[in-house]
Amino acid sequence: MANQEEIFKKIISHAKEYGFVFQSSEIYDGLSAVYDYGPYGSELKQNLKTYWWKAMVQLHEEIVGLDSAIFMHPTTWKASGHIDAFNDPMIDNKDSKKRYRADVLVEDYCAKIEAKIDKEIKKAAKRFGDSFDEATFRSTNPRVLGYQEKIETILSRLGKSLEAEDLGDVKALIEELEIACPVSGSKNWTEVRQFNLMFGTKMGSTAEGSTDLYLRPETAQGIFVNFLNVQKTARMKIPFGIAQTGKAFRNEIVARQFIFRMREFEQMEMQFFVAPGDEMKWYEYWKETRMKWHESLGFGQEFYRFHDHEKLAHYANAAADIEFKFPFGFKEVEGIHSRTDYDLSKHQEFSGKKLQYFDPERNEHYVPYVVETSIGLDRLFLLVMSQCFKEESYKTGDREETRTVLNLPPFLAPVKASIMPLVKKDGLPEKAREIFKKLSLNFSVQYDEKDSIGKRYRRQDAIGTPFCITVDHDTVDSNTVTLRDRDNMTQERISIDSLEEKLRSKVSMEAQLGSLI
Ligand code: GAP
Image (cartoon, rainbow, N blue to C red; front, side, top):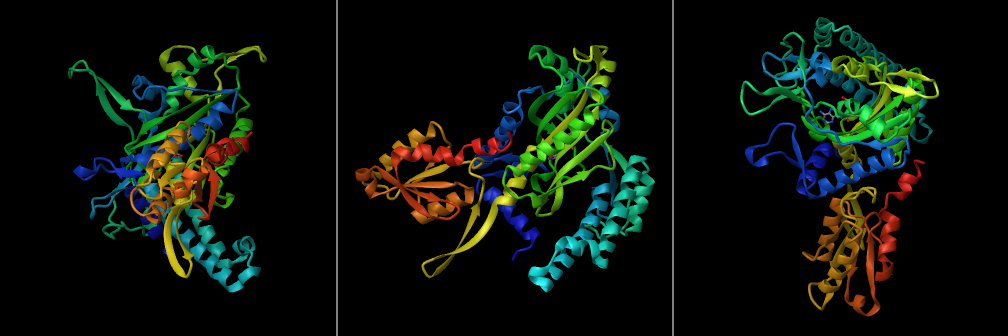
């Protein structure tokens, strides 16, 4: 079996070959860590966004939406702390001249130890067979316990050094662990320095009259500065939330792993405004609610875990990540943060405008506390692609065949059904187009007549289309078509009149959304 690295490479080339994700400005050799979404990628991304929006806004009477601008008044970023504190610790290797995030070098070192644990577990599982109990093995095997302790010691020291901004100790840790530059192989490092992640730009036509602006590094601030506008116009009572999706920009030092860490990306964020003192209750509520949302995608609980933060961002009093098991290990896909009243208080201070709420039940004015849920849409996209990409072998008669298939949950699939005339004559294309036109009113469907039917099935499997509808010579007389299921490759003959209902029952979001209420 291919190893995880090879699988990940295959996913990246599949994403390009089948029109999901392209390198930005590829004809000019690309722009590092910036990507474009192709015909199927943009549909899948849109479906993910819709699923998030429906679950967060449509299903919650206490949450409303917002679409704030990317450009914001520059004082926003002074108030939010991003100008002073939105930094990553970086270190350069003097031989390769490559720049790295110092904390990521240490985390990658720990990931290698974690890979050793996985290896021990695999070995033991093979040795003990059915009687193997992973939990007991993890908690008793001396070698695994040793590795685990080493990881904990390293990460705890890293967390403490970063918290105390002791960059000298971060460098000392890198040296003690003898971490080498992956490119030059040398341990010839510079000091660790802080690097601000915001992109600057200018607004205005003349050099003297222009204003320095930043491209927003998170969508959240657009929500904070609109807090009262939304609360008053939508007549919201605390606790309530404001949700928005949109682009964010970060000058990441190390942008890699395809669309996992990008310089331009999309966030889906929700700020939940609560009374002071209630924030921990809501923090727990949102941790659980968001994990349930992830599980509703149907990929299995074992692929997710929480990671509670030791080092907190400048605005938070509690924070956890929801991590997913990507082909390159467990990594953050979403953050749940208890942001206290930090942001609203700061905007109040810097703008001189009151950002308070009158609570009729408490009969008092206060600056609300905020619990935030923040998920990266591109990272979610990568999660789905990683989980659904499969290379399968199967039998046709005596022949062993292989296919590449994206087992996308049908409600997320870019194309719900492909309508195919068996041959390009005898009136079959006309009939197929008639069906296409009818279904296209409600579903994203495709008309496909090129190549043999087998090749067409393979192509649809590769983009994750859950159903293929084939129009053949019996169609005209019997008003029926064959409906092929992507996952088990079986075909059934069904009446054209029942197609719409059948598709609706299989591809709508209703069942998944239903599991959330
Ligand atoms: N408003 C809070 C906030 O922005 P964050 O943990 O920095 O918190 C939230 O980001 C989510 O945004 C992350 O969990 C991740 O999914 C996504 N994200 C952050 N930086 C990213 C990047 N460079 N590329 C892609 N996604 C990113």
